[in-house]
Image (cartoon, rainbow, N blue to C red):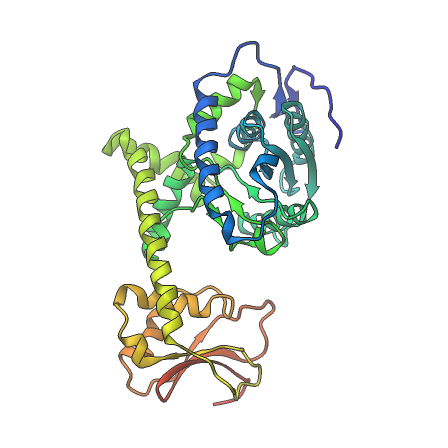
Length: 386
């Protein structure tokens, strides 16, 4: 997409809503832009320290290149604008899910704003398998990863803020899924659907930034962002947390409650990352390679030595199970993990634990974790086998 001159007047889409626009600022960027640029600098320091984890030949002196997922909202447009001011080579990708009237207008205008800010940009149309937030997110990350692959395996950056982090912590508490669910989103991921689709990594450089800063940065940069009506409609759980629960928390616990939730997520992430590394070391001790399998659909799985597993602290056991079955099975619930753990810790002859298949559509039969003699094994059971 070539650079396009911007009309400073606000543009209105087919639904009568303001779409993103850009008016060159008449004054130097203010404190909100500086706040975001400091966050980008801090994130890039983390990124530089972790580059050894992936193959990367592009040296720092050649500049940092990235792909930025942009919705046209304040968070992502401020990320694009500040990334350009940092000297990063930013390519913005605006995903049009086609789920709202006028979405094509919003996407096109957002791409134009990104170009006016100094980034390259393109619009990608996707077709989610169903009109749900989860399906749209799945297609969005797949598309971002595919574009990143075409452009040489760039890292994909998304504009999740500290406010998003606080919302995720509250949603994790509601699910009751353990430390990992309240640890918040990590700043860098090398295992993610966008990475599976071709990106080098997924980065979240704005986790220390508040939403007020991104809105303020847009004003300082001359950007009029798009306000997604679904963010405040109350139609999904996250929007209700944002518009109903968090204001009530502030009212009852004080204005600092959200900042403290963000800090808690960051501290918990550090602890959870450490435990994950410990679990990975313990898993290597527990694994046994199976040279044969009687499974009708070989899982290619190693077994877990029960005696070694029982010597591990309880804080690591659930993590060992999840890491062992990662990429071999579908999403595991707390009930799955507890039942598998009981095969080792509370053995009384019970049958195997059925878990979700990793593949879609699922093969016929069931995927099971079973206890055989002195180890836990992953096996497939054909329909009718007992």
